[in-house]
Each structure stands twice: as C-alpha cells, then as structure tokens.
Image (cartoon, rainbow, N blue to C red):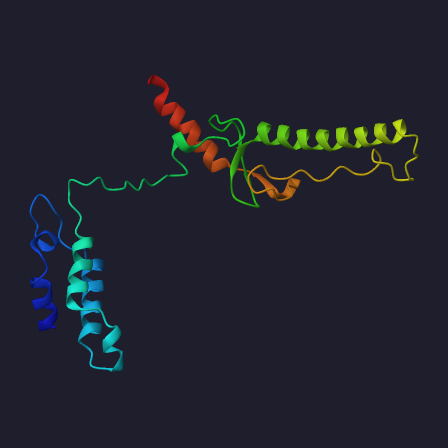
Length: 188
C-alpha cells in the first residue's frame, strides 16, 4: 500500500491537487489507479504485459479534469412533474390520462381513442382500395373479401404492441397530480 501512496505522490500536481483549477482524483479513478499499480508490481510471467509506472501516470493525467472544462449535465427527468406530463400524441398536458399496460406510457384518453380509430379506419380504407383494385381488374375476390376480414387490432403509439380494452387503464394518480398542480398554479 505504501508503494501506491508513493506512486500517487509522484503523479503530477494537476492530477491530485485541490486547487481552484483542477479537481482531485475521484474515488473511482483512485481505485483504478491503485489496481493498475498493483498489477504492475506483480512478479509473474505477465510482467511484460503489465503497464509501466509511466503509463499509469499518463493515465492518471488524462483523468485530471480542469474545473474550467464544461462538465456534462445529467438531468433527472421526473416522469410525474407537470412539465413532463404531456401526451405523446397531442403533446399537451394529459386530459383524462390513461396508462398502457404494454409499456407503461400515459396518453390522453381521447387521443388514444382517436389513435385507435384512425388505425381501424386506415385498415378499412386499405381493404376498400384492395376491393376496388380487384373490381377494376375484373377479378373476383374469394369468399372472405378484403372488406369482410376483421380489421387488425390497434397498436400502442409508443411500443406498437396490440392494445385491448383491458390493456388501457385510467391513471387516477396522474389525474390527481395534474388537478392539484392546476389548483396551486391557478394564480400564476
């Protein structure tokens, strides 16, 4: 362990100082450095492949990050925050939010109903086009014509799984949260 402390002490100052220009090594960076040093100190046939102290110091220098450098911002996106309470179809705040069981995404009830209706209408219009094309070509369709076939089940706008009435549930918690936020922000 003493060797590690001596090796860390030999790392250039920008990597380990706590001045206003740079940050000290993080716990994760220090543990990586310690692991690299412990590997380089082993006496085994693999010593030829172990990193040298110079390589370890170079890696540590790369780990030093100046405080002046822009750091990536990781923002937590609270799914229940009102600004995130938007429907993926109409892009407005949920009106009567419903939760899909297939992927757990919320939509407005009327938006999801319209979505399902459009999918059924699209399937029926496709069947009409197929029937008209068959009539124009003078061919007869079999007993189960395109129009008589059952329309396909509507799919989820988010994950494209089949939606049934039992896979869509009213999300009362989100509805209460939105109602509460509207009441609080009424004066805003």
